Image 1 (cartoon, rainbow, N blue to C red):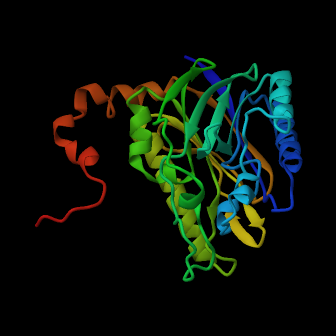
Image 2 (tube, helix red, strand yellow):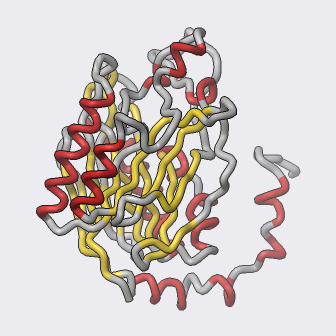
Length: 308
């Protein structure tokens, strides 16, 4: 079986005034650190090129579109791919995608160690709301600026490993992992930008949010016998705190690497994908144990329906 050193490039805050060149420079610095540690696949956060712009209400579409990438790679992101190719590191990162026909997605891409894009995923579980909410301490307007992903949950064999991608809120939905688990996924990469609610949040409240994040990732990893690398953008971004807590989880649900700061920070773990085999052939041998004749409700309805 394949062994791969997987790295997580947690990023500290990106301010609204920071240009793409600031983000790309920091991403390259983290990539060079990763290379020095023998990392072969490096995972960056959701919306790694910009601040988390859905926190602002914007009516002007031209203003909105300034946060989106029209091509990947483009002139500003080409150095990322060039450096990855030079160092022989596969990468995955999130960005806002504007398609040629005017569609807007929260997207992530995956490359091989030659710097070639081998996969694309568009975020499916969009949180938040689509209009200004006067009752909220801050806005979360992903439903305003993004369309739900239209590519499903595909997987790719990359560098000898069956890999899939997810983004942020996707990690909280068991369907995310199971759709990829049914395709034999061995590594799920996931970037996120998760608010810490507000700057006055208690230590207990932040601890609870981190616990829920870890719980979701660890459960998804264990229940599908896959590694998961969940990597954050963190820290005080334009006055709004984002929690860190980047982790790499093994197929038994154990955390094998964890960030300790809310700054740019590299974590990494040597992943032996043979470990996936035990879970996939015993407790979670889907072919032997799943009873799909009883699961119809999962895809036939969205909201809960109380019938008793």
